[in-house]
Image (cartoon, rainbow, N blue to C red; front, side, top):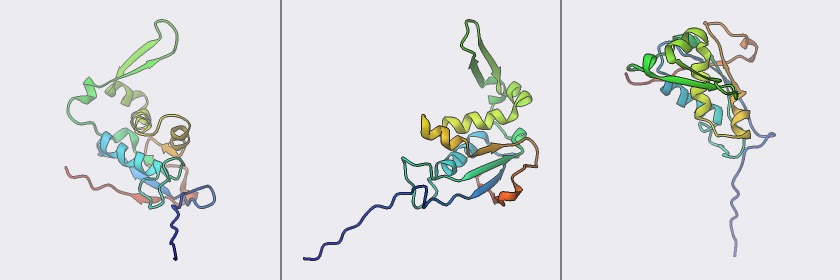
Length: 151
């Protein structure tokens, strides 16, 4: 009797191939673009996706200050930070955060969509967010990545 044995192939450091992608955030909705980028950082777009291994790609986001928020989120959405000291809680609206640290909006949204713990911290290191249209990663030859969201 001839038995066939199939073995599931998992990605590892020797087999993983990482690409570099550049995304223009100008006019894109914050939540929609964040979920797609989190999927790419995690590696779920690859056929050899491995849940317990960081097999995702690198993502460079440009024009972070031009990301869009729908509805009244610019005035109503509140970001809280806490220093750890008594009275150290600070809050800021999305408009205030966009004025001071525009990259934080995208980083915060994408970080929340990644796994928590050591694996998520490794994945978020592959994200590079820049204000303006230029970035210093031209040597990696990133490919343009566009999203077709229905408006």
